[in-house]
Length: 329
Image (cartoon, rainbow, N blue to C red):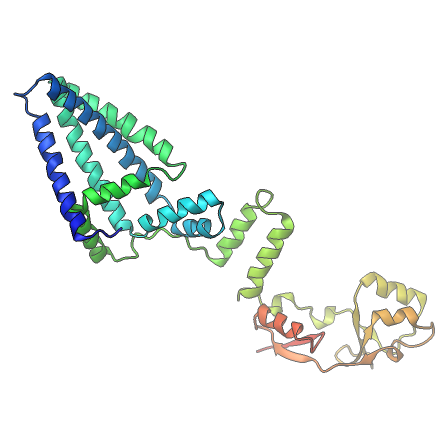
């Protein structure tokens, strides 16, 4: 919302005209019918302007820039249109804030003066202006403007008219507070994103989708390492290479559901000599040993137990190994 010098001069002229109109409408010695009608129309115009400013203050200042950018790229055509119109206005929060507050201050001070000239008594003017501003300048506009993109052009008009006042104020705020002090973009931490996905369970996302998305965050993050997922050696399902194949053994292997089973010798689980592919049991004959069906133990790739899960996945995807041993750092 940057205006050229000509626009600033025009806005100064418009402010001057408004000031003269207020002075003329408030001249108590010129209480003709035309003046009274002008005062009434001016009060109505100020009430409408108060409602627009109040609604825009709530509707625009409460918007999140991250949400707007998401709607711009993935929303419905109507949402994309609204976001494209709002983002340029919302991009300078200090200028927007100064514009709306300055306009609200001018209107709030002008309306009681105009109503006082219409009614002729101060207490009536105070009571009437308070009720009018509360009902038509606050309650109804804020309830209406909070539900969508409304009257964005009115905000640009206020910015145009009040440019001599709001631009210096916005620059002063930027200088005092910094550009990022009034940013409202929401930033989520990894755990907060996971919590948000769980809140959307059964409303926007299914249970499987939540599991997949949270799993991806765990995979890329550093909070969970292979150490938390690995199976300790004493809990690994292993068999002695000299074990004879029997129907009961085949059934036990099938019930465990492993596609690869390490085989050891000499009764020591640490002495792994080969790997049994369970599918080879389909064509095996009873009475032979497991070791006769196994393939030689492949060379295991050793990685740190504290490496990232994403790096571990990359190693598996390269296809050079089916098992990886983890070592202490």
